[in-house]
Amino acid sequence: MAAPRVVVAGGHSAGHIEPAMNFADAVRRLVPTAEITALGTVRGLDTTLIPARGYPLELIPPAPLPRRPGRALLRTPGKLRDSVRAAGSVLRRVRAEAVVGFGGYVSLPAYLAAREQGLPIVVHEANARPGVANRLAARLTTHVFAAAPGVRLPHATAIGIPLRPAIAGLDRP
Image (cartoon, rainbow, N blue to C red):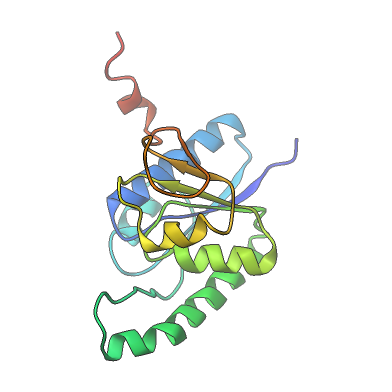
């Protein structure tokens, strides 16, 4: 089997980054030659947590969605366009075969770039209330997974949260 080339996108907070890295670790356990690239931004914990786990990190400009009307909201389309272009460049450079997103600032541009390139999109939502990026992405793919049943996303299948083996086995002798 050829080594898969996957881009994981989940940034800003440990709540997005840890499941993404745990997923990456699981893929590597299954296929040690897998080429996994993490997509992140300079905001948040991306530049600290991801390199510490040993994965290449590609940075794109952040495109946060302001929660209130104002000048920042007016600049959002341009920022998002720039971020999608940067994500698309990364996807082409690493010859990605799929994008697996976990939410956060970096996921929406990754999803949109993957859509433009015709790449499969996989979404994982760890929260009870999905964020904007994952709500949009769930409309772009049928590969949608959630931490728990009842998460309101189209096509969602509850599978839990990817955990490190050391944590997943805490309740076992």
